[in-house]
Image (cartoon, rainbow, N blue to C red):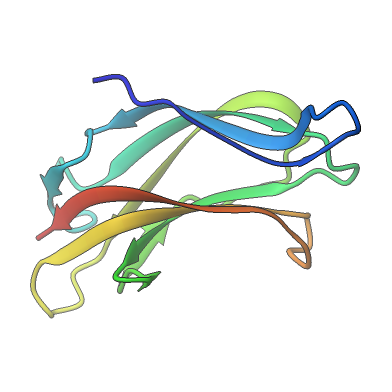
Length: 133
């Protein structure tokens, strides 16, 4: 299965997206069962996306795992530099073993903010189905 997700926020007067992300690959695909972070060779979800950022100062982009509406306990995710223009990036997310048994990730939050994180440029939730154990 090929997974593509197009998300955008803000637009100019011609309705052209200014800040957007398009997920081009997810490995492993959802649903999936993985080990906790750094406990096995299959311990993370890898996401590749194309981005286009027109915010004048650039933007930071995160993909964070969520469980039942909150950030997943013990979550791990790729940090973000400041991005401008268009490009492609590969990131990961996972969860650490916090001693409470298997953890189900049911959504990922895609967040784009200005560089100092004072302005949310995009926030979207995408349903997924991953269990970390």
